[in-house]
Length: 425
Image (cartoon, rainbow, N blue to C red; front, top):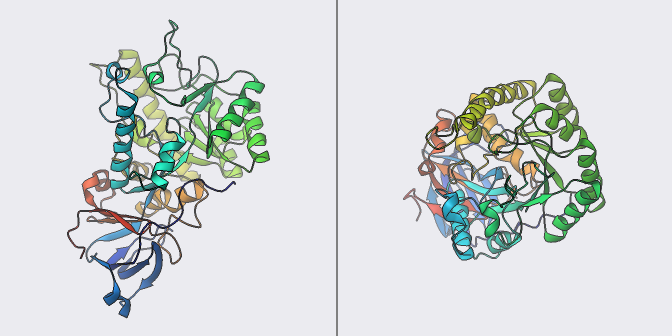
């Protein structure tokens, strides 16, 4: 895989000492209690009992009675979709307003405990660069920039009457690419790589939320996914994330070589077998699946479609988890409220993961999905100090982490970016 463009250098300076924590390290290992962590210039330098270095700390964080975990990775977000946005208002805003709203979504995402995220259409490299330069507070970002689908597919912004979806009015770079032929697919991929994409997102099915298609409708073909896999391999390698909700399109994505299946709301035993054989990662986005449209706002057929697919999606996730399919945490934030990312942990536990396994899915497994496991995803000496402190015991009440207020401190690259603990000195 090609080198990541997101910042992997420490941002903190000096010595930050965390005292007396119960550590859940992200590997799936059992917690360790009463542990101190020394962070030196943004990197985890020491994990163990108290040492003379305590007197030299620039900041000391008393973590006795609290739990310390790695910074979380949300592998499926859409940060350009702000909380509370109304379609009729969006096209009237200035581009700057959208940019500041996106920056606010990035800030509250970090404060929820997500220090790294993968935006799967909408966010431009400028936001990734702004985080890297310290101009705004946000997660380290992997970007798809745009998603690919055929005419009339999930990414097509043209309405039946020829008008364009409201979001197209303010996007500096289109968050969509409509491709029908193999030549169009390859050109779109090359354009995205030139622009700076870290991951290529394809739609091999329609969607629950889109009015002109459904999860059973097919998008890009297996052969076109193979073409993309071949093209990115020629150019240093990139992950391929497939929006795939219905079974047939999901199978096409997996056989074609996608590295992660996003949603995966319908799965046969044969599909699960193929995913296990190929190491395809499931990002089930159960937070979004669990949201039911308001019947006072949405048409009855839309509500009925969502209720039907909730049943299918929960069953698919449970069977995939029981079979041992690798899972990474992803929320589809933007559809799901921004800043409530860790709600997905509870949904993963409901689907069959243990709390320890769910935390692993949101930390080291997510870092591995992004190719960053050498730097992030676990509390280990030599890794970057992306850390989350919580006031609750996540193994006892994983659902409590849905409230970002339970995340009392967030450290990113050794820099304290959130501290509600009142324990730092």
